[in-house]
Image (cartoon, rainbow, N blue to C red; front, side):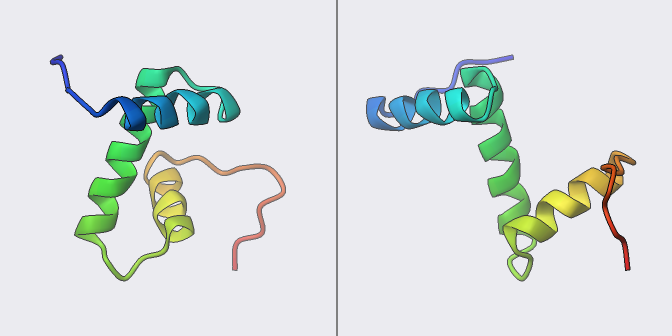
Amino acid sequence: MGIVKIADGLHDEVRRASTVMCRSINAQAEFWMKIGMLAEANPTLSFNDIVKMTLEEAEVRPRGLVVA
């Protein structure tokens, strides 16, 4: 584990988003980094496609989800 230095303004955005998303500040920053990395590696995928792909890889099947 290391320390990542980010701008104060970005830290404030992470803090506010973490409250809304019920995550710790670190968990929110890690989520954004992971999604950003996957988006760069898969530029044709939407955010929803990336989340769906990640859930499928973790074998998570939300209840009530209709899969075509």
